[in-house]
Amino acid sequence: MANTFKNAVSSAIGTGQTSVYTVPSATTTTVIGLTVSNIAASNITVDVVVTDTSSGTSAFLVKAATIVPGSALVPVGGDQKVVLETTDVIKVTSNTASSADVIVSVLEQT
Image 1 (cartoon, rainbow, N blue to C red):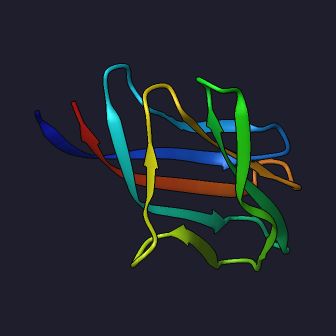
Image 2: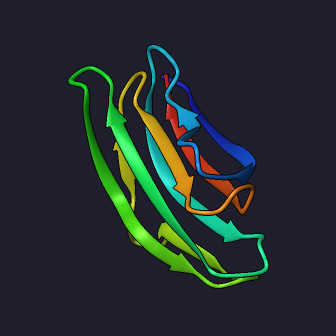
């Protein structure tokens, strides 16, 4: 089995739910960091959702979290980790157009 560290970067996320990371086929992933930054001039509210595509179930990592301008929310990092399986997806939505940048750091195991 091979282990690979990777980053997925998405910029200017807005009001449409945006897939920021999808686990590749034949891969298990450990999310070791996830940061959502506010790039707007006012407060934004964000949701971060994980979708288990095999069951069709979605769950919030954070729901309606407020991020002040120039600040960031780190829902995954430090002691917090999330394990994802093949084709699972992390999605982010903001209440403001083009207002959030996201970086997802993962360890992929194939």
